[in-house]
Length: 149
Image 1 (cartoon, helix red, strand yellow):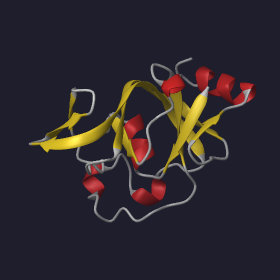
Image 2: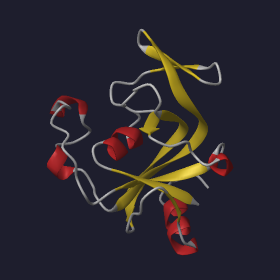
Image 3: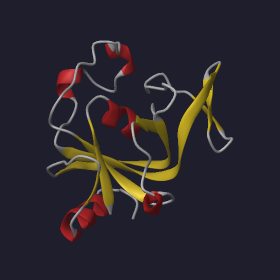
């Protein structure tokens, strides 16, 4: 299974269904489209003072770190080419409704997620940059905790 690391609170916002896309500077690898990804909460933190605590699934200091928190199917990836009111148009002609948490600057890429399955118990594993692969033991632990295969 492939994985991506996100800083908190974004990993938990996905796990709790409050965020259904990830915005990045690069396109997702084509081999990952339609596949299940493990969503990893990175140990390192970045400033998230712009997000009111009421929007978070728990106080920032209590969010899990260094663990896989959920799995999600990567539906598609599209480059933001033009903004609309509360939505944006992709280079492939699709329109995606903005959630309040992404960075939707023109030129960035949206990784659209679906079939999000939070894990009953987060699975500890060191994170990495970009897309990375879980070993067989970690993949089995993710699936046994309720993640999709």
